[in-house]
Image 1 (cartoon, rainbow, N blue to C red):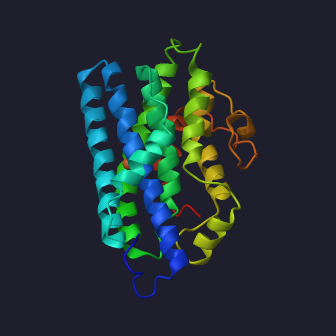
Image 2 (cartoon, rainbow, N blue to C red):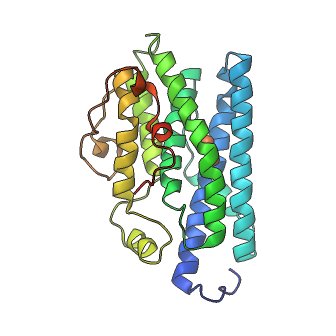
Length: 256
Ligand SMILES: [Fe+2]
Ligand SMILES: [Fe+2]
């Protein structure tokens, strides 16, 4: 199915890299579908410009991963990604508020998940990831501001917890299963930095301030069908600075 392994890339590492690329490509095209679908709910020119720019960047992320996959395997990634999207479709937003929630939590999950590959021992993956991470930093921080701003109007009180949980689950699905044999292998050969459990915890801590501002509560992850750390998120910081995403406050610091 694939080109002969590069010198120095053994079969297990080759298969792991193929899986990583396929998973990332799926998440990028899914993001383009989510935000593209949500465009009809966007009420103002300034946000329309933002979301169309965002969709374009998701497509560029998909294209970058697809190019890397073709260079690595000699094959197109598109049939694999299309089949996976058909088998595991992502939810599509049904309102502007839900679109904002998706941008906040789906992209924030992707941002934290990708940071684990910033020092990936496979150089082409590392290069692609670094470009994507910088763009995702902007997407999800804007999503958080929008969610907080819309929630504080009080107009979404009836639906906010349900929509939060739907997109929290989608964000958490980015990380994979904690403690798996595959995760241990990827760590051992330097493809990623930490086990998914530790990364999930950072993600949960990172969204705690916005949750608090919005009057949202963290459900037990098992009720979302997610296996992960069950530690409660850190107490939110009070005061106006808590509206700032931690990813901006801590930009440049190592995630480990
Ligand atoms: Fe992306
Ligand atoms: Fe994004």
